[in-house]
Image (cartoon, protein in one colour):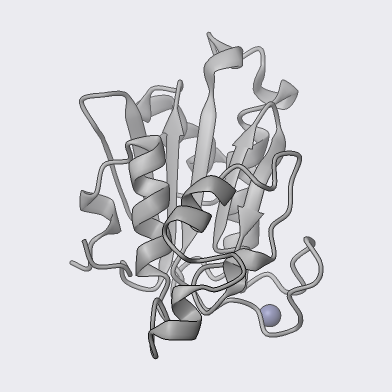
Length: 186
Ligand SMILES: [Zn+2]
């Protein structure tokens, strides 16, 4: 698998049918450029940064549809998961805060349930060391095993390791069982 997809945003949602997911984004003024669904229950949307520069708005809407605001429109609210991935650059305004500093640089990964961001962080170049959310350490075991975080990391021993976040995206995709088609460069 080669991350990244063309510069833009990927929203994966489990628990909401693709047609409804598309409808929620379209009515919010954020229609997807492409969409699809996997056989095992993930619906996904693709947005291009050129036409939808406000990735923060896309991430936030995806987060909201897992929560109470959409409870009357989603049949099994307790089983709605949202995974957001951005191939836009990580914000250089500072990585010490969970709140994004600018709309065009949303957090590159966010996993949401119940209307809240459960785990979020940026990808590659040691950015996995700065994690936020109610379960910020959701991926810490995999990160330790794969040498992305810890006392000694592959960042220390392998020059150029994971500069584009490909390893991190692979770990995320495997954990959630995401369809890989939307993650590829097309
Ligand atoms: Zn920024």
